[in-house]
Image (cartoon, rainbow, N blue to C red; front, side, top):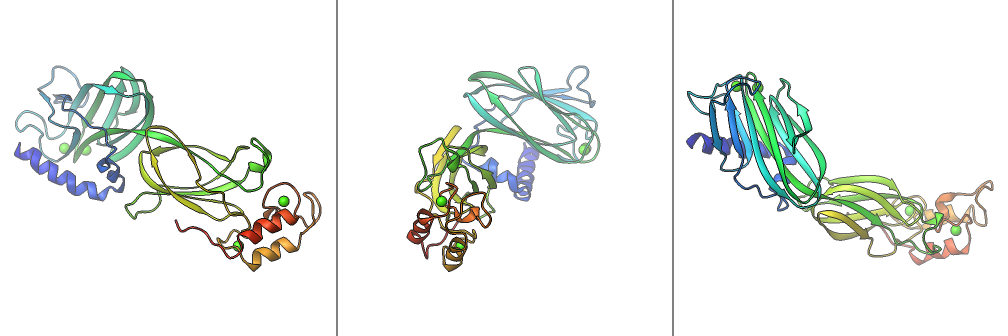
Length: 312
Ligand SMILES: [Ca+2]
Ligand SMILES: [Ca+2]
Ligand SMILES: [Ca+2]
Ligand SMILES: [Ca+2]
């Protein structure tokens, strides 16, 4: 037990090294009940009868280091472990994370979902999978060759995100004029860099296509190529999250610098009256995306003159 306590401390220290490990500490973490069965083998191929079998008191979160897991019974090197459990899942999308040194392979209901049963140094990986509601067999097979040994595995339910813009002066959806490009940031409250930072096209309903995302509370910042950014707080849950930006985006930022001012007015004035396809037409000044730069675009700009982007 002492060894486990020491290993837990080492794990805590290592966890601070892995930035992504913050995920594991989020309140969205799947709660693991203590029903992993661990079978230990003194070879790297899970062959023969196990030399030790136990029920884990927690998760698979072992930074074994260089010593034997079970002194005098399990080898320091050249051993393997099969962890198995039957666990209840809600229906939905799940993200599975692992760290291993050396190899690991994972089966869900007997189907291989991850297979890197190879000698390697400490490696982290993740994969996603849609789970049906009910109980599922999860088996994690792991081996250690030489040197340090790590076995760590967890999962959490994730969701998808799609964001719909509300744009000014557009015909009813769906319509091509709703198609634009948006810059989207999604920030958690850790002060770290955004967990999502992407440019993406909208479809004819002004919607950005779904993105897989961790559950949690975030600040969502959205800017389209000719409109000022809006920001709002969103709470993303498991499954599909359809978020509508909570206010119409202010149009008129022709140069996309986050401020609507005289420069944007100049960019509008030069091609004023031009139709799409005509020489001198500037799509960046066609704020309502209707193929003509006219008084409508002027008034969209004038309404928001002097305004700037919401801060992220
Ligand atoms: Ca070792
Ligand atoms: Ca190793
Ligand atoms: Ca501008
Ligand atoms: Ca226009």
